[in-house]
Image 1 (cartoon, rainbow, N blue to C red):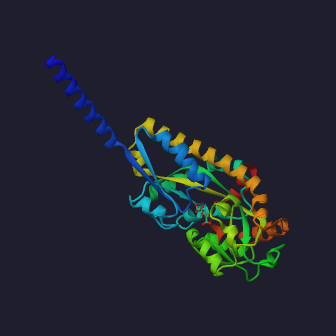
Image 2: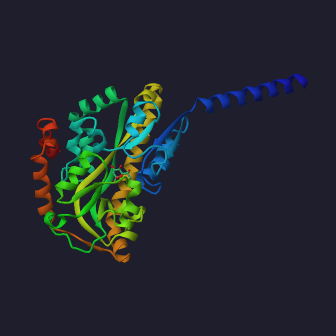
Image 3: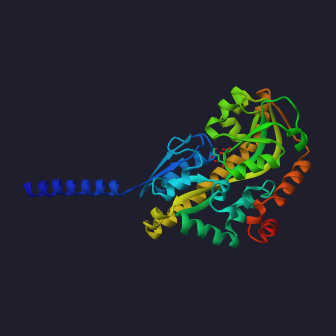
Length: 325
Ligand code: KDO
């Protein structure tokens, strides 16, 4: 009896040590993003990505830019201080100008087009360069939505000319500021987490984001109208540390990749549904929601890009390849 008990005790001790070792061996995947926890990309990462990798990794998200300031995340991953972020073509373009092609207004048509473009062969060398030089693996494309003007001023906006002198908040990179100018406005750089206060105090006349973000961050409380320009079918990329990736076993890498794609798909579908429903929500909040002369905006924006220095950095022939998809 004594011997059996001794074995049982020893066995239990061994098992608990193994469990502890396994728990300790789990990697922690910290993600920093200015997104709110209610954002559909955040919801999908927490409810789809995290459980799918939980056998070997603990997903630790930090929303509202609580760990790193918006726009500093890629550098943090490159330096080994962060494992994941939700990056943008605009952030990548400030390091690798060829990514600027995806920051151009009226280029991507919709969520499915974004997926096709991300999977296209011509993206291979661009992704590899970011991986090899920056140490960042772009796992999947996440749909953010159609960006619309959301203004605190009364003036109705029909054409780009109506935006002359309007202080439009855009995120703080050159690519974003250029889009603001291309729309006809006066772009002002402000971080995402500062938008609400900037609208409230009148430091800016407006901002642009997809409808679900406007709802989530309560911008309707401090604005009067939404002008449906749909000037950018916006996307983000799920960024992952190449160093951490290389330390994973092949089956773990496959699990991370599938978890990322599944989360992106889940977020995409929910975001599309929200976009189709939310117009009424803002009207109920007393905002005017209307369509401008979208053709006038498209022509103005496309011309601004093609005439700009930015377009010189775009890979030869890629606009046609993108349009053909
Ligand atoms: C924003 O700052 O307006 C923006 O929408 C830009 C996106 O690329 C992305 O960074 C997003 O903010 C954040 O994820 C917050 O939703």
